[in-house]
Image 1: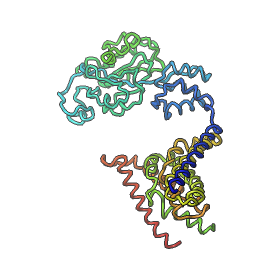
Image 2: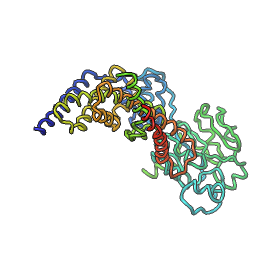
Image 3: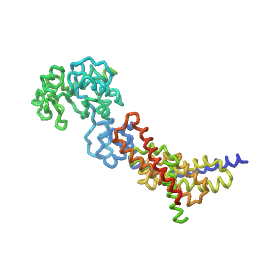
Image 4: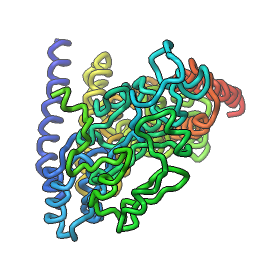
Amino acid sequence: MDILYSVLALGGMGIVLGLLLALASRVFAVRGTRGSDAILELLPQTDCGACGFPGCAAFANELLRSPALAGECAIGGAAVAEKLSALLGAPQAKNTRQTALVRCSGGLRAKNRYQYEGLSDCSAATRIGGASPKECPYGCIGLGTCVSVCPRGAIGLVEGVAVVDHERCVCCMKCARACPKGIITAVPYYADVNVACSSLQKGAALRRMCDIGCLGCKVCEKTCVHKAIRVIDNLAEIDFDKCTGCGDCAEKCPRKLIVDAKLDRAPRMFTEEHS
Amino acid sequence: MTLQSIVTISLGAILIENFVLVRFLGICPFLGASKRPDTAFGMSMAVVFVMTAASAVTWLVDRFLLRALSLEYMRTVAFILVIAALVQFAEMFIKKYLPALHSALGIYLPLITTNCAVLGVTVLNSDHASGFIESVFFAFFAGCGFTLAIMLFASVRQRLEYCDIPAPFEGLPIALVTASLISMAFSGFSGLQLLI
């Protein structure tokens, strides 16, 4: 009898509660929260968090309130920004997608100060025998600490220097925090030209250490008709608000350090090796 | 239900027999949701809500179903069933009629369906065979005790972020050490029992 009672009591409770819940889900159904479902469909739904919100659903809800954020989706890029702006009736949002850039092009072209044979980790290498195994104290050490922290597999070592695949990069900047040299910075994804060097040394000193680094010769500064590139402390810097991506600086750069991505988007891009 | 007995229950549930720090119930959300004070607050509000509602419902189930049929040994299963259903129901209701509260409680509401602190308070009520109002008050104050503990802990943890912690202790180990220190401090309240 005991068994029967307990089975009946619990089973009955289960059935009653189940029916109540089924009923409640009908009665209290909340219909698609005012269009955020439609927005969510346009988003990549990988919940990467690069927009600064916890997941695509939260971002979709935020977009309802402030449509101006339509360009914030790093993975979606221009295509998604356009669709979102159309859906939300907002003016075309400027795409703010960014990508990490390793500001060094040295690698094998930068001379070694000594042969480093320690732990294969950049931080370890900076702690013995001075700042770096390379002659250039600013440059990429090339042991791949950034490669190992990248969650998207977007960094590779090409000819001894770390290179970011701009297509895969979502600009989480984990690499920038891991780099002991602090030479990884965020640049606009749509930047056509970049100066991938961090050396503040004078030209003559740098020339002895590296075959590609910026000498601070100011040829680019004189070439640029948009006044978008300036040499500060022996290093060319591009103001991306002014840069139109005409590529004149890349053409005139005597070291071929500045690369015009329109002609040859990152010529040393390691994806070519992978694919 | 005199004022004196309310004070007794509240002191007992919040300080002397604090659910987290003295009874060691609900340690999982205590450690999991205490990295930042605002998430800790959301969590503890959800716990207060669910504890109070659950103890009211389980009191009825306990008295009119289990005890009536002398099925006390089915208590744990029945309580879990009732609490889970109640939380689901409450979530649907809140989502429909109180969207602001829903977004404040957020994901914490469904998460604490099977929180042992919630089950613990209902089982304790059943053990003590306390009255309905007494049970609900006890559950509410137990939730307040949980809030106090997790808010204290969250604020300490936030300061820990700025401390120079030895590498082997970083993260959870130092959090556990901190929790045990707070718990030891709360053991000092056990003497209060003499006064009441």
